[in-house]
Amino acid sequence: MSDLTDEQKRDFEAAAFRRLVEHLRERSDVQNIDLMNLAGFCRNCLSNWYRDAAEADGVGLSKDAAREIVYGMPYDEWKARHQGAASDAQKAAFDVNKPRD
Image (cartoon, rainbow, N blue to C red):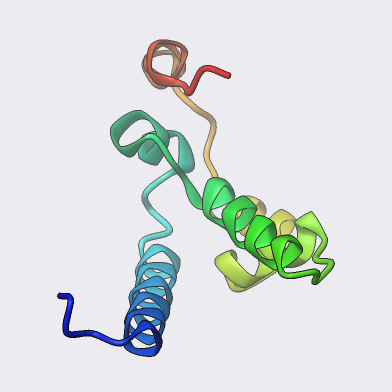
């Protein structure tokens, strides 16, 4: 890995990010609460990290714009199309697993 240039690392990381976003768009059946419960992050987390990176580079990006980049559509539209109500079991698991500040 040390043979990679900084540019190669950046390009490969960007490609992996794009593939992850594409995968998450295709798997709209997987709810954010399931991602949080299993992996400790969700689509909203990913959009927040994207926004944080933009702001760290001096680029203002709204929460809605960052979410649209990750979801591939406005967040409210995605929710209306794909988001179901969380079950009591999902909510209980989230209460146990959610990140603590």
